[in-house]
Length: 417
Ligand code: PMP
Image (tube, helix red, strand yellow):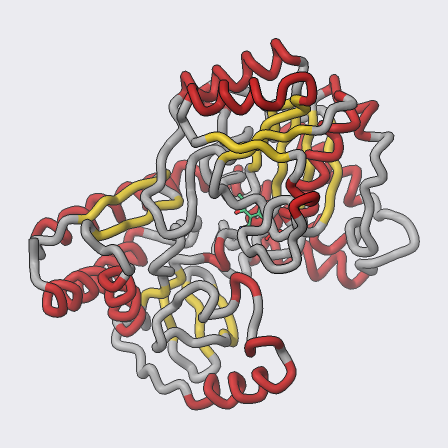
């Protein structure tokens, strides 16, 4: 398992041919191998996931270091989550009114996330971030939201990184600053002036394909202070980091609490769910915004989320993922040194990313990702990776066997430093 995959992709190729006829470009969004710049040996289709492993449609098995770009936090098909989902599915998922699960989950969510006094559930991270902006505007009666240049907050016109179909008006009320840069933040606040409604920011800087950067606590405190002074809202976009850095919210360790937070990805271990959490002060205004969607009240994913949060606590998963992340980092950094390759290993231990120095067109990272896949580990060459609670020491050692082969491939192709 997990080493020397066959890399025969006949079934994958057949599905790609069929997809090209009926799906734009054969696949869309971040699950397109083309859009995510995955090397040619990456399968476009996967058949199943199990614990720390995924299997493609041709039967090749890989250790999963991408975790569906974040949602899989306990490992694929975690027994307690599957059991809870099955039990709820037997009762019904999409009913004419919410099931009791929504109350139970809101109780659990608000007792888990420290700043949260209320919660609203949705389906996608974009629903949650967009809802936060609307609540901030409703609360302040102002228009301008500040965001970090280049940060990803979803696929809506106000934030998509792709320009097609986006009008200048869609972003007329956005202003931008740079992560951890106090001066650029102050300039954006000044630019927003009387219209400053809020600021949205991710817990750390995790822009695709670049070195990651942890937040400077002083910078986070500046954001909090400024929002308080201006009566604007601080919105933490915890869609990607949520529950991987801290169960109580990703800025709990630095003691900065947002007014609103956006969640999705990992909160139901792969079931479709998002959440907006808010503090008491904004409860009433949240009730004046029409937050809804046909599937937002579906009960199966809520049952899965309740079980996910329970298992995260019971398994001490956050600490275990961090330990696995440290093990991975120590191993990868040592391997790069042994291969005489200069890398930057950045990000949170549970969401790391590496870049090679002088890798301007990502050619080294592409070679690295391709060779790691052939050696049995699925990781994205231009996106941060994700640890999950099924990544035992044994699994991390398998990953390290793959990365060692991958570094070797890079050195043979491009030489050492
Ligand atoms: N915010 C962040 C930080 C994200 O990483 C993402 C998804 N990658 C989103 C928002 C949007 O979430 P979704 O794709 O579920 O709409």
